[in-house]
Length: 81
Image: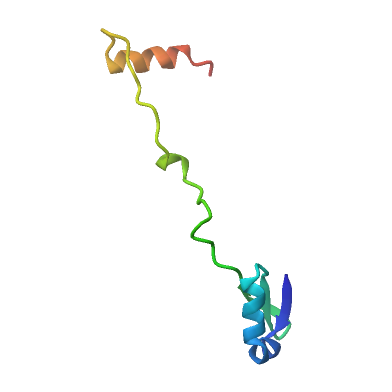
């Protein structure tokens, strides 16, 4: 990570963007305090992590002759909590 004051960033903005393009992070300071970070964009080719609630799942198959409510009650009774 590169840390630069705002005045240096203004003077060398193109060079700072070149660093970011190479994968570096640039932190910009104003009066000695961090105010911004330039980070590389996420690549369109990189796989994104899919949240668990969006992942496909196998449908529940009930045994023949068992209702959904009975299956839920049976599972509750078998749980060890």
